[in-house]
Length: 146
Ligand code: HEC
Image 1 (cartoon, protein in one colour):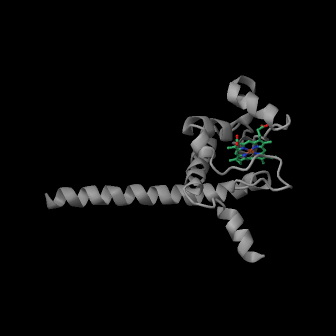
Image 2 (cartoon, rainbow, N blue to C red; image 1 turned 90 degrees about the horizontal axis):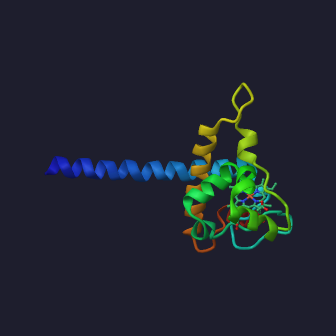
């Protein structure tokens, strides 16, 4: 029994630390992939941003939809009804497929596996951000400096 409990608590520990790693990776990818130049993490859209404020997105969309959207908005705008509606609501400014553009194999083709890993990490980061009252993870950092 003791051994069993030890294994269970060990797995729980590994599980939570993997998630914590994924969230911090996602946060790094969010800035590396320049998502922050077009999106705020609070519910307030900044004047310099072309994209909508992202606070609450993980509550409004399914994980599957968000991972697909973040991975390849270009493809989604071709075939997905929600994406098409979003484009109209955003004044017909399409989101640049940053992850796709920035993660290519040496032969120039898109590294889809890497794009998916990064999109899932960004999703974990956005979900964590949505669990905070002000949502502004990066904005909070910026506020402190001012
Ligand atoms: C060059 C500007 C730009 C960049 C960079 C960008 N986006 Fe966007 N994003 C947009 C625009 C514009 C929309 C509105 C949808 C549309 O018209 O395509 C959008 C929509 C979204 C949405 C849906 C929001 C909602 O409320 O419906 C999410 C989520 C999102 N982007 C996440 C990301 C992530 C994550 C990254 C980084 C990998 C990123 N965006 C990079 C411009 C950008």
